[in-house]
Amino acid sequence: MNLKRTILFETERLVFTTWDEADCALAFALWGDHEVTRWTSSSDVLSEEEVEARLTREIQREKQEGVQYWPLFQKGSDVFVGCCGLGPYAPKEHIYELGFLLTRDHWGQGYAQEAAQAVVRYAFDKLGAVQLVAGHHPDDEAAHHILSKLGFEHTEDRRDEATGTMRPFYILNKTQPVL
Image 1 (cartoon, rainbow, N blue to C red):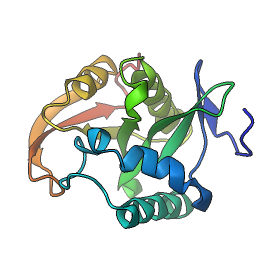
Image 2: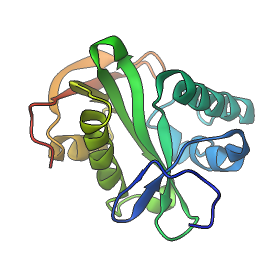
Image 3: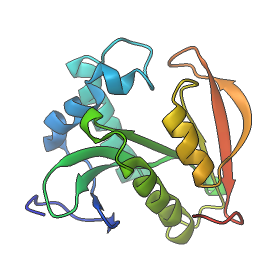
Image 4: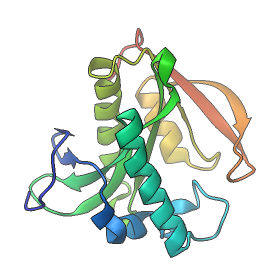
């Protein structure tokens, strides 16, 4: 990898790093793409200011909580794939929220499942998580498939404040096997 980044962990094809202030172009390539954010945002497209605010939140979350939706790069190259990581859900109880979002040109190649599987292991093995939660847009069949393959169990549907939609909500306990 030619980028001057600290590598958090790797998978067979991916490298996990952390966001920094110089990542505005990468952040905009992901969160500024309507086809990507239609699964996560109520607005048609995030403005430049909204993307910058999202990037700042991710950087602050890493500093304060030790987690973020980490940027992903193809191993052996500088090609940005998207992000996958954790948000604090109930950190005092060691419960985190799993999330993943890929750039459009990396959909359908197995990167999201590979990344999510690595983050699940990281959460349980390195962070001492006892449970992970996740949700997705009700029309995002790929996210449903990934969460199901990882062993997450659908528990209920919840209203998402950002989009106003009812979203499936899932839980994965540490005692459940991770594929």
